[in-house]
Amino acid sequence: GVKLAERPELRSAAEAVPILAQFIGETDREVFAIALLTVRHRLLGLHTVSVGCLTASLVHCREVFKPAILAGSAAILAAHNHPSGDPEPSAEDVALTRRLAAAGQLLGIELLDHLVIGEAGRFVSLRERGAL
Image (tube, rainbow, N blue to C red; front, side):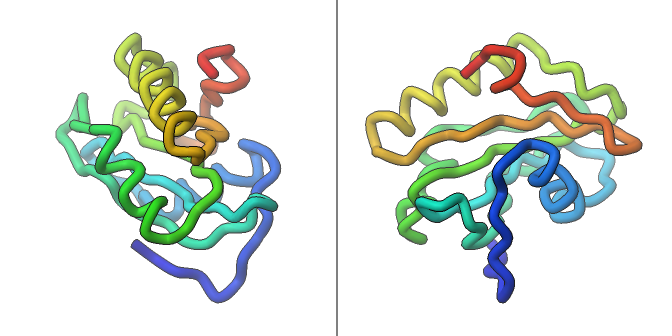
């Protein structure tokens, strides 16, 4: 994970994507990361949950929420890249989003959004798509 000196407030997907895209970087593998947030959605830190292969990344709820619990996060933003450059979410992406939202509800740590990041600044917000 990374802790930040500055704690920007992430109020929208458009504000979060540049930070998460830079953290994930340009890679030929799927990388699943989370932004750890305060009650006021200020950024506490960033954490890489999983690095997968070209088309998938193994993600489990316990691995997503462990750093959030340890950091005392009130909410998280999840994000992963699609090395193909196409940010269109898969059925697995939608199913994972719903599992994470349910787990977060039980833990009292809100999943604000799950962002799928493509190339050239393109992204899809699963909240805006109605998956949350």
